[in-house]
Length: 166
Image (cartoon, rainbow, N blue to C red; front, side):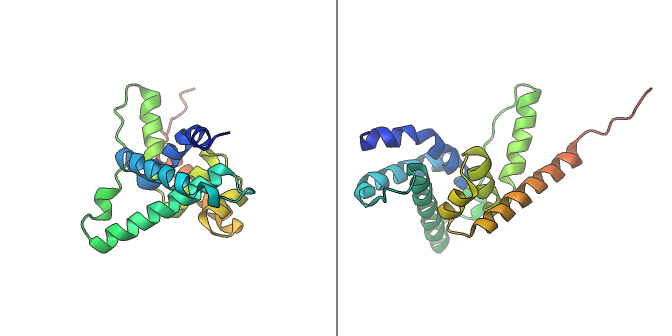
């Protein structure tokens, strides 16, 4: 399969992961473009045993971290303005609940949020997520567990308390 076709097939997953990293749709678009450009330039350096998605996600995370470090050095923007959750106007109850869940996921600490998205949304194994993030597999297990516990706790706090009328 030609290089550009393989990259095009991963575009949607890359966009989701970029939004997870950046918390901003426009910044995520730029990150995906930068990652695809780098992937095309570095295609010949890719190891055959590494899955394409894991290679791209690792590259994207590294680009994001590099950009974050550069922004921090320049002190031109505060982190608060760089990381705002996407705003989607609710049209019905399901959208409202989905937005609440998304807001809870986006409010998780970065390490937990990224691990949860890689494992739960992108379908990475714990081992693949660990390799992508450059941490031990047990760390991924712990981060995902803490993220899920935090989401369960937040759900229990916001669930309506109904009383029996029988």
